[in-house]
Image (tube, rainbow, N blue to C red; front, side, top):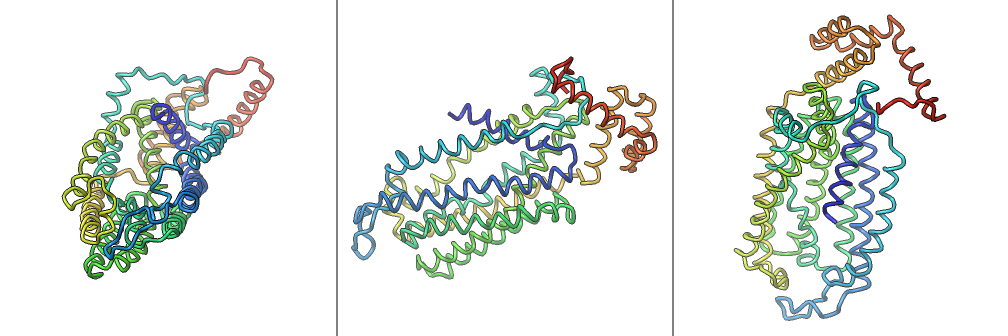
Length: 416
């Protein structure tokens, strides 16, 4: 299942990078798109625990609390929901995933008759020459724990707040914090740039996690006070992290465009898989950290010990320390990211010029002059040249002719 999920994820994330050749339009599409498709996990996060706890909770099956009173074993912690509810949801969303396959078109800036074929080992070698993918992966690996405390909000609900409804409420309300960040990302990116937005996001995540850590001490070991404060601060943490849903996709698109600028090849598959391997290897090492923390404070496999404030609160404190450190460390590689929005626009214009040269629309000499102007800071050189010489109209006319050929099946052009 994981093998085929990786194929799906590769195709899905890659198509977002080439849904438009315009960086600004692409960012807006990603912003709206991430907001829409994040509704799926939001619905699951809200509906699944609600149905699980309503249908499968075992009264008095959760052992005794500190006062010797029997605790309910919430349905989310039983096998029933995973045998019945989850498979049904899986089939529904699996079918919806095909909307992407049949409803989205790729629009890359390539010569019309260029066939994309990169030898495997050349692709791997070229990947290591892309400094931006190295920086992005370093930031992702170092910052992988920046919102770790959010992963344990179900612990807060189940073992601290202790309510059938708290987990559904938490997993309904907290993900709502993603929506403002995702929708505002295009505006924030235009005003502050992707790099500054990521730096701010990482440091804000570290700040709210630090406040959360402080509340575990201010609460004096009272699980209810600490639990609800962590609930509220998890919302703020999610809000701070939300912009990275869009910025990460945008940065990935920049890495692909830069790769094409440097080597002439689109290498979505290689770049994605390189990042996947790097993060997977790092994840294998990181997987030992949280179990070590849990074991140190007395939790191995008996979940009943998590009802004890002297066990769960120290564990959550260490997770907060881990989150603060990760937020700060994840920001460090981004200080070396020098791909500004202006520089990226210039690269995209250069790619258009190169494609026009290879398609025979303009000569190599003119293409060289335009490329020199673009890289010299005149980001409108190609646009102005097209308007002066009526090139844009001729390109549109040819595209219409090719589209008509494809529609009728007559002499359809090769992959473009």
